[in-house]
Picture 1 (spheres, rainbow, N blue to C red):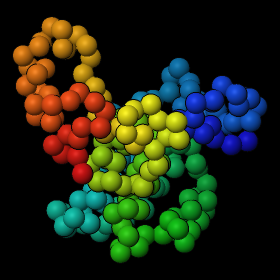
Picture 2: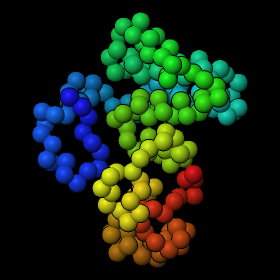
Picture 3: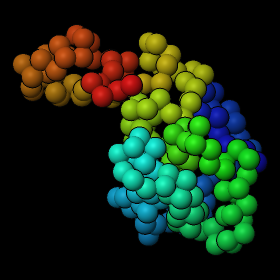
Length: 181
């Protein structure tokens, strides 16, 4: 069983039996928690701040703590499995690649918080992502903003036009915001 390919036109042609679905209660249960900020997310943000030199903490320790908190949140209880994962060659913290590692693992940890990971990707360009094979926007690239609803244009025209001026004149999914990398 595998994941469903992202952004393909004929997704309905793939039988359900051939793809995995998030089925455990931590994701699909009606009483599944929806954290505003998870402990993993906080540790990842602190690790990023340490790498940038904004705080005087150890980025590697924060990165490892973030992965442990994420795995705990998702129900991984076996400490040896967590340690084995953290010490895997591709995961083990490497200061020369620390920012990409932190943001990649944060992207994984925030599995159910797509807007947050999308904002991190737009802000940093990490992790490296590929656009959908059958993208629907004109550029075919990963969108970098959401378009304004038509009600904004219809009910708040003057401010809508002013906002478009700040975006370069167009309301499309490829107009970068001021903070976008």
